[in-house]
Image (cartoon, rainbow, N blue to C red; front, side, top):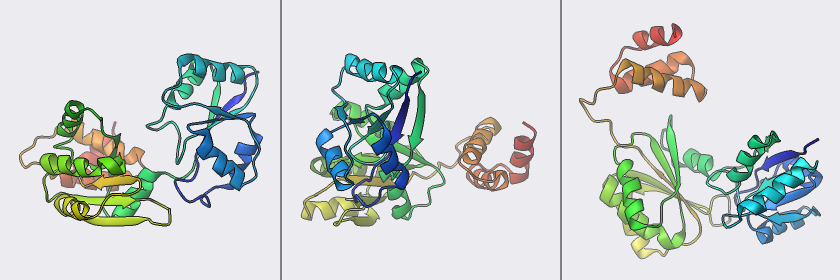
Length: 276
C-alpha cells in the first residue's frame, strides 16, 4: 500500500509561526523533501525534530522526483516543505504533486502561513479579487510582455521580488502602470525588520532611490480602473459572480459587487445566477 504525500506549510520568517499539526507531521513522516536542506534543518533543530531530509529543488531532475515517488509507492510517508511558506506554489514541489496524481498517491495538505495572503491583508487595498504573479521573468522581453498583459488588469496584483531587482521592477511598474498607481511594499514579513510602505509607485521609486533595498519583498499593486464604455456580456458578468461565490461571498453580495462594476442590475444578475 502506498504512503501519503504531505504538503507542509512552514513559517515565512518567524519560526514561532508553526502549528502543532505541522510539528506532528514533520516528526511522523518517514522523510522530508526540502528546497534547501540547510534552511529546513534550522527549523527542525529549533523544535528538536530528527528526520531524514532529501533535497528537491528547481534543478532536481525527473529521475530525482521518480526516486521520491518510488519510496512513497513502497509505503513511506513523505512531507514536502519549502524554505518559507506554502510549498508547491511558484515552487518545484508541484512536480511531485502531479506525479502523485499520476500514480494514485494520496496527497494531504498541512496549511501554514502565506506571504501572499499576509501582504494583501496588510496592504489596506480592498481585495475582493487578486491575482498572484509571483516573480517576474528575468528576461527583459518576457518581463515586458508579462507586464503589458497586466496593464489593464483590474484585480489587485501581488508580486514577489528580490532586493537587488526591486528598483528595476518599480521602474517597470511606473512605465506600465503609471506613477500614481497605489502600491504596498511589504518587506521582511513576520521578521524583526518587517516594514510596510503604502504609497504610489512614483513615491516608492523615489524612496528606494535614497534607501537601498534589503530583505525579501512582496509587492501589492492596486488594479487599474475599469475603462468606461468597456462592454461586458451577461455571461461574463455571471462568471464574475460565480468566482466571487466560489471565494466565499454570498450570492447577493457577489451580484451587488459585479453589478457595480458592470452596470447590470443586481436583481437581474441574482435571478440569472439562481436559475443556472
